[in-house]
Length: 274
Image (cartoon, rainbow, N blue to C red):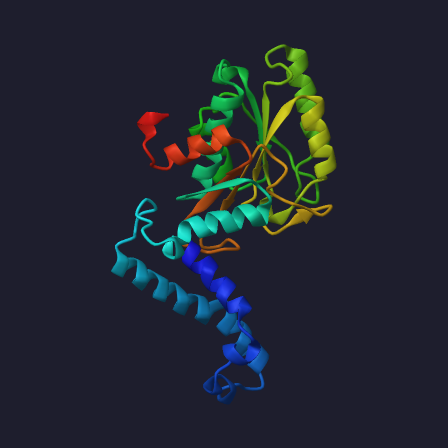
């Protein structure tokens, strides 16, 4: 992941004259202008070339594991984690193998840190009905199969906050779930972001914890604040169709020290010590 991120940063920092070679200019056509070739070089060819160079360096230095960071400048994974945390506006990031795992691990951390004495069946989890199947699957993997409740979308395909609040009220009136024992897994499906002022107001009113699935939303903002910075936990995906493409991959973000420690241990760093 970091090799691509570093390449993108390198490419974006290059002046136009550096990005375009003589052969690039010679080969342009009416359909493919110099500007078009510049974009292609910037977004495809240069990242690929830089990525291959980075991979070669890692192979030569035997640094194919995140715990083999003998040379700081070649620790591309850590560089990416820090860069993405800064972009999103969160204190910590932990790179993982997929966005789905990031969601399930985030939920496990929230259960462990925020609800240590509560059984899974005492915690209601709300999430989008309109989303990719990896999102509800992650909720099931995290242990919330019996308490997951899906919320409908509006005509604009954002989470229907009226429906969400009605479901919360119904759950409270039933006596099965209590205020403060709720999690909202909010998915920005297709980059659709709801009214985050109201989302945060509902979270405050019902003491509901927020996890943001920003797989389709990183880079987006609401009222000047980056998506992925509103929740206790947020996640992204870097699967091949996402904004940043590493084939497969993802990250989980938090400002909570204890949750980040859990993420690090769960990602393969001495789990038995947790």
